[in-house]
Amino acid sequence: MIIVTIAGALGKDAEVKSTQGGDQLCTFSLAGSVGFGDRKQTIWFDVTKWGKGADQLAKMLLKGTKVTVSGELSQREYDGKTYLQVRADHVALQGERSAGQQSGHRNQNGAGTRDDISRAPFDDGLDNDLPPF
Image 1 (cartoon, rainbow, N blue to C red):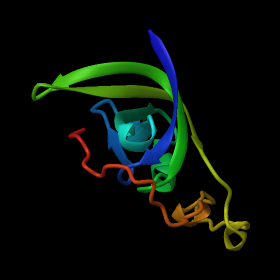
Image 2 (cartoon, helix red, strand yellow):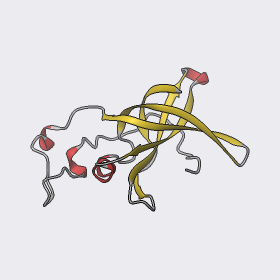
Image 3 (cartoon, one colour):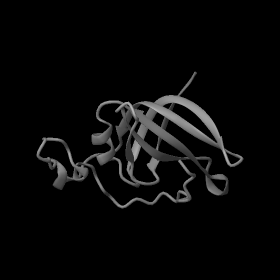
Image 4 (cartoon, rainbow, N blue to C red):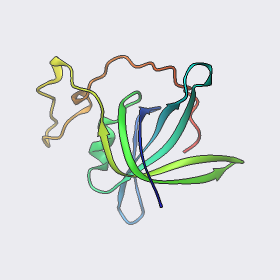
């Protein structure tokens, strides 16, 4: 088993899925950069976070959100390409909330909404071509 910690940005909004047994999972694509200058590369990871709170987590994980993920690394083959996957144990949002968001917005259940996280403009030059998930 290989455990990794990755810091990067989401390539698109996270999605919530359910298994036939009723278990929930949150899935998202995370981009990280390695190298610098003309040798800079973007590496994509397909991340899955299982269990309670998957639906609430997905509400906070929007395209461009910066997160740190720790979990078990694996890979899969699809159409002759190799895709890296992480089964996340921990997902942490990076950055601080803006002054206007300090109090946070709550829905009827008291849970945070998408407005709870900072939505500063995001552009780190990552390649926006996402592999199939």
